[in-house]
Length: 96
Image 1: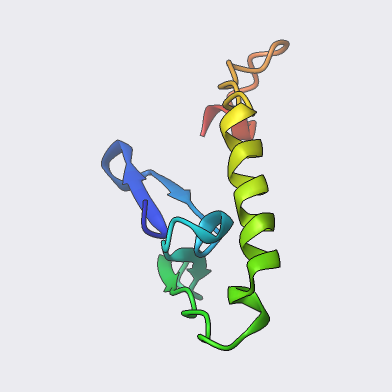
Image 2: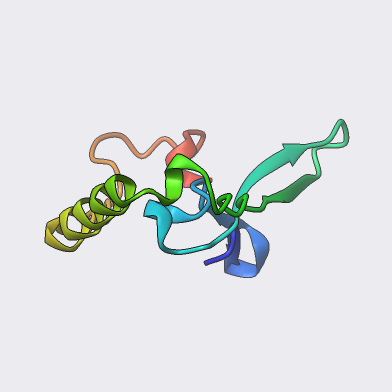
């Protein structure tokens, strides 16, 4: 995913806020800008390429990145949420 994705005829927008996720994805992130007329506009945030001589490219950093990748592989995915239990208040955000 590069920054954002629209679903449900544009009524739902999923944002991905982390650029270059875990130093491996080279993806863009995004923010939503809300205009005065309440129009929602996604803006991409592109990752900055690492400098060749920076500490980011050091062998120690590579070990840290590898450790993070292994950690993410072992982590189970976030479970989806069901509808909230309780009242059926159609004015609540759960019904929007």
